[in-house]
Image 1 (tube, chains in turn purple, green):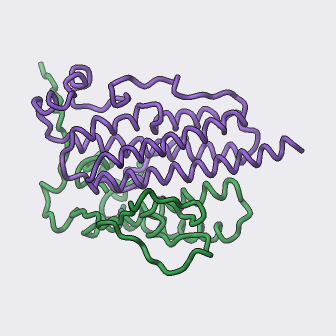
Image 2 (image 1 turned 90 degrees about the vertical axis):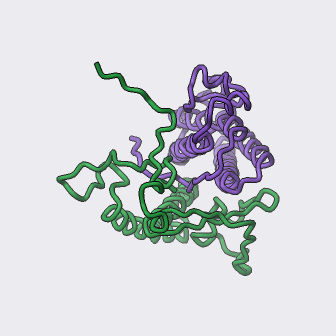
Image 3 (image 1 turned 135 degrees about the vertical axis):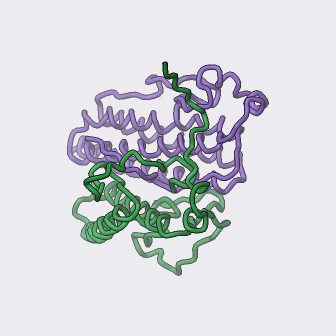
Length: 186
Length: 158
């Protein structure tokens, strides 16, 4: 069961409008290395995990990623507050506006819509965990690249938090994979 | 015939409607390199440090360049909410560890300690500022779950 708490995982209060960053950040919602892909991936893979450790870890990380989806959506939302049509045109978001107005939609920074082709769920826990480790590393570097592209601390702080979460997830997946590999070898 | 128009900027800006000094004045301080003394031989960070860094565990913590941020909030609602966020974060991070190492007594004890604090803080917050979950409404005669602010509204959250 999934329950909702009316509260963000990490505080987000962006005071300065930044249309350029909004356009880039959306990729961590609907892009290949984004939080939505992560959530769907882990919440799908958890059913074929062989034991309690795998079922629990994949579930807990998958649900945490849904909270991160909310954070990214919030950031984009706040960054676009009071944006005008002229500003949208200036930053190349007029193409977005045609289909999505000033709204949130799962796509990458070029407007390419989200697809389940971004994830794999092979039913094989060894393969799945290897994919999960790669996914977390890609997400980490994506956050680092996004952090390189802004100086606004209101944006950098949540991005830094999200980046560190990817590192933690990577390590837990690695530990679980090593544990399963040892089991397989016995 | 009633036609509904959705204004794209339908934020409920909490701070515009209330005394700002009472509610959210939000500040993230610059590059605070935490110096909590030599605690490298310890496993777990303290709550505020772990939350700011996004990681409760020293051994897997990796900063990016010199990016470290601290969250400052003002006002009672936001302080209570930040405490809840920090405790929820700690529980989540400790749970990921305990999923793989369920017999670790030290981490389990910390988990229970934070869990107690979280329940108390949630009760305090919900009594004064409304529900955090659908079953958290204290006044049975008033449905407040759908009330503004919502977490993404400016001033609604942190």
